[in-house]
Image (tube, rainbow, N blue to C red; front, side, top):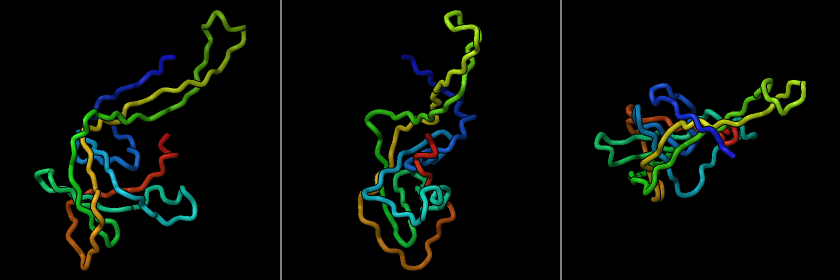
Length: 155
């Protein structure tokens, strides 16, 4: 079985990324690895979608990432992956077979699945240390927002 994978032009790709990924520049997507689990309060899984979880900051030399979640501060490190990871998105559509000679005279609708490459990940940010409590309000004006999306809505 062949599965078609569409690779769009990088400048036109503005798809939502899964929750473990962050776009840090125009052309680079990075995997975020946390030790443990994020506890986001909600009554139903769909209520968590689009909620702000934390703020990610990376210094100008791209060496020291920090993540602020509530009153907790995490320091991480950027690691190059041994093999690149492709992030793909599944999309289903209905195809009509009118020209198929093996099919009876009736038109048949057939469901098809295609995959679209959203990003190629070559590096990841690893937050492996315990979070430090924050006292006061740090300046996070140049940070990236980390938003929670349930993985079931991305498939």
